[in-house]
Length: 265
Image (cartoon, rainbow, N blue to C red; front, side, top):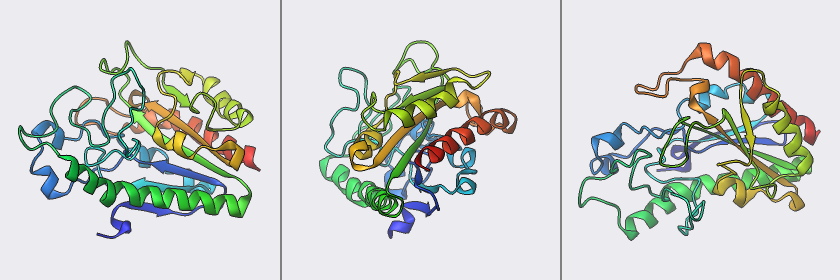
């Protein structure tokens, strides 16, 4: 397996890189054979995010998208196993249960330490090597690098939060991962979008990728958007993409990326 089997990458012409770590659907046969029927349906995928942001290349953004499911290994988690949100319910770097608390593995077939380490080496590290390398190149080329980590989630998930999430969940690690002026400009686009709700550093403040790579003092600025899936798709199986809904939210997302690029310019 080469790194081209781990992710898809298309370089851009601006300082912006869009990372899509959770829209991958592939599960190697040897891992799938140990999984439950519920897990093989991969319900916790960030469904259709690549399609939703298909305009990114037109804006000049580079795009890095994982091919494998987050059930194989979660690219947005610390490889050392540190909890993303201490004190809250967290999923592991190799998840053991779905968001609905259904077992991912058949009884007795759960991954052990060696299996987890192997997946980190095989899938996690190549993605992050490319991510780090591209951010370095962007900073060298443009004097600044911008990272936009694109995610989506069901709007109602009792395991992680009460009630229904706002449509746009914007995160900058509580201000640590991006310049305050960039963050304000980007969030303004979301907060002013008619027909949608938005929150700044609310329940989701940015995952491992945002926190690991966002270093404003070093010229690398990272923001995350956790978008509720009700804004562009059916949240129940078979998780269909809804062009009628997507047509309303895509202009907002386009303006968001454009505002980020404009700030760097």
